[in-house]
View 1 (cartoon, rainbow, N blue to C red):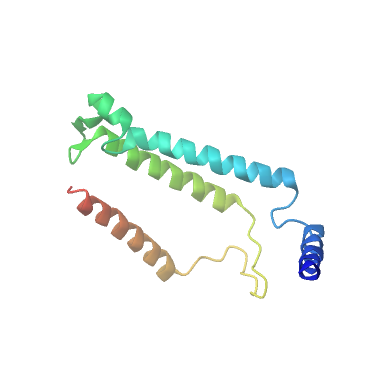
View 2 (cartoon, helix red, strand yellow):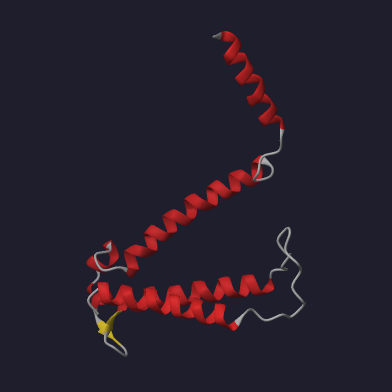
Length: 138
């Protein structure tokens, strides 16, 4: 039985000699910290932007209906923060240099994505938003 254990131990030590897939340990620690901070900030923001959230329940102003469609303030905050997040991601992705995936031919500089793919993505997003509104009883 000890021989089997020592064989696995050698294999494990060989795996530890290889670099981690996330890069150096400091980068992995940053990734972990980012996940924890992102989780807590998401839960905190949900308290402001969801029916039944702690802040929405404590302050009646968040449930007041305003604007077109007479949506509650918390829902306007949810839509606005989603739009803001999509814009930030779009700006980040647009400014990021793109490298072709291994085995794929490089795309011509300035090439436009297939319009059918863009239309499908937009339609999918609208379906998700519409389904969420229907489920919420709006």
